[in-house]
Length: 116
Image (tube, rainbow, N blue to C red):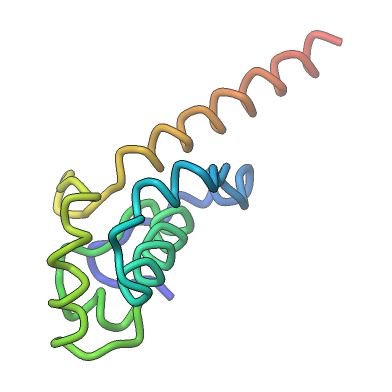
């Protein structure tokens, strides 16, 4: 499902169906989050990994999260600091760092295979 404001990088998705999840970092950074906020956050991270970003529009985030506009406003009050606006879409800097590492690792592996 692609929503307005989300971009799809099929090459990234093919090469990297998963991202590294550091449980201790996640728990430390979400310690003060409610269960609802924590669930929304991991859902948005997964959406962003698959689609390259999350939409900047609250209505689109409601669809992703399966929640009402009121519920989205409540969780977004906490989560908005975890994302930065880039070219009209929201990205999580830490997740993008992992995406870059994964891409670089895949490129290195491809080069090594070509050299053999």
